[in-house]
Image 1 (cartoon, rainbow over the protein chains, first blue to last red):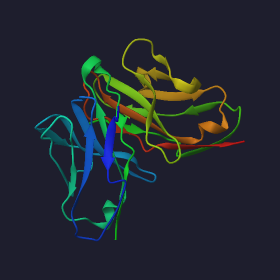
Image 2: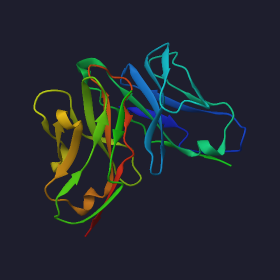
Image 3: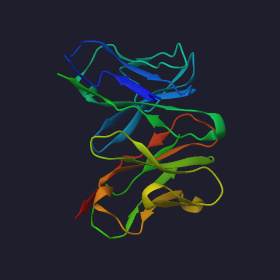
Image 4: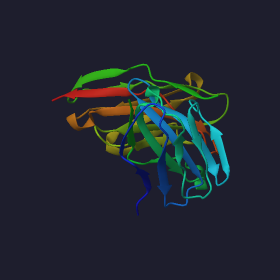
Length: 114
Length: 114
């Protein structure tokens, strides 16, 4: 059981480049989300999705796009990377059944923008 | 909108000392509350959660937390810490009955002196 899988684990970009962080879960979870983690700021919610075809903005959505075409996948796109997007990104999923709300996290993707 | 405040940014304790980490949230409705832990180099793991019922919840590794609705607080406690508890601890809040939009606090780094 893989859980939540993120790729790549590490990435270095130049300012202005684009890239996609991939996230896949095999738990049939309806809810998926992306967070960024920065020192002293905890985890900040970027975008989230409550099901296929439905996405919404979190606390810090600017500079990021998402889509949810399947239940399993929730990619995060950076269209034009900026140094301020240097961070560790975590994808997380949650099942709505039983109102658990518990998030299951991927192992993170460390992104450096030069 | 939800928000979470963790007042202690860095706590340093000796082994066997008692621990209490503060967490206050802001949200007008009924909430789900969580504490997550992140050990060095790892992703976040659930420590404990509160949805309803007994406001004193027990989690893994001897941790517990008390939900005080009148104070909008959900403080984390452990009677006697161990060196292996060195980690970063995050409080989080979500709307009750929903798997969506879980917001995290800025985290508290706990360092245990052996």
